[in-house]
Length: 619
Image 1: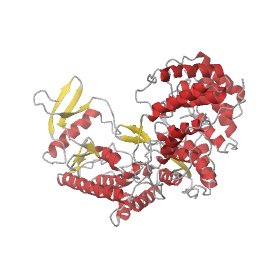
Image 2: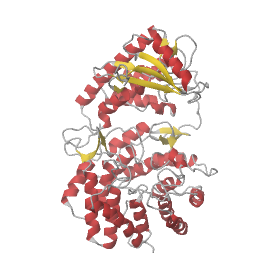
Image 3: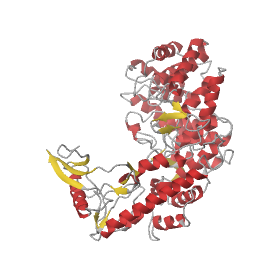
Image 4: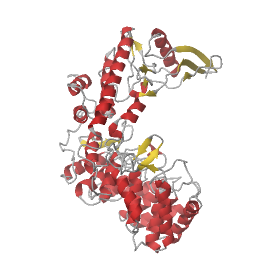
């Protein structure tokens, strides 16, 4: 808020020598450019007013009008009917997903109206001789009255000056459309596609995605005639364009879209992609994945080698000659980590668990022994990296006293009505109360002590208290204005622990709750394909909790939208769709685990330690 005027404004900050782009221009140079463009476009309603410029020490600031409303990206997330399970009648999930025709029609009318307003705004810029240069949903504000305003003019430039934006948003730029108005023409077309199928960043990985994503949009939404043909024309490369990574012909396998379909070709393709990506010559990571693997998690279960090897093993795909060498890499990586994390998904426990599953018991116990020198006071309580996962691992290795001690630490919190250590909003399987509930369940299975059962029931109630009903007969985690169905923080993970609890306890109320969680797994489209935070997790839970109205077919089809090619094989990009991933949490290994269960019948392989504790666990 400006002291002199009382008006609320936006400050655009820049510092010298910071944020260098491909041409060596720093943030201040781009701020200079934005100031010049806003001055040139002054008076247009689709452009923020420039109030002035100021400087404090070395920091430069543009003072701009605060545009009320939300970004187009936020508006899409709030309105898109396929981002939520939209069945309002409580019916079973049909073959076309969960949203009815009226929701799809309403959304399509809104999207087409917004697109018309954006096209008129861009035309006004072009009439002033300005190319915007970075059209994407985060750079469009939608005001409460429905009008639009373009923001972030640091890459804008004068039409005809030969300028090419040095920065651009992946999925909304193309190497063959980087000069003049072609930049905005391509950006508008990509933005049009993103309004209906917001997976446009995948176009950079696989040229075949354009036909698939446009055809899907036409099939799912009542878009105007010729919608797909126009987008394919505007987004396709010119005939003389040579793809950057034109290696390895596609394997030709079709993506399976129904449970029970021929699984081997798709599963083999994902397996080959994972193995082809391996870099055993590197010490920092074995398979490409989430950047968190470089934070002492290169061997870990979620983002590192252990999770990939686990997925290959439990899906029966560990017969490759290189597999034993990869296991040796995992052993070496666990030994050389100087500051190991203790947890199940992020540290030593997960590595020990996987080595034990792979028949490397001595190395597994050696890895687990390193826990004795790790202070657990700083870790959280959940299954991912906290006491629940560590306790469940100790129990699997037969150390009942250690598991009970960790269980007692968690019991004191739940019995006193306290808050779990860690983030205040922690909920769900990986970081919330469902992780301790799983440990309590396993302790009851092992000891028969009914107190552990009551604690599991109470811990589940704490997570279920964060849930609500997005529609009749369904249950998901409520997070502000969002509903979370996912495996890590959403209903899917809570449902798996409910199911584990109910395998040994006849609880009619919790059985009904589990069924409502299962009914809430119909969200047709998530922006991530991953096991923990995306579509594969919903598929995995739908398969494990199979019942009337199972959503497995819905998620298989949606994973087909996410699927891209790596060296001709099928692979997946992590959340954000900017980088291919092979890891268990975010990438291809997690999808392999989920798809294998859906296609081969039965509940499929469980997540680590979601299986019952072995009664003959070694001492």
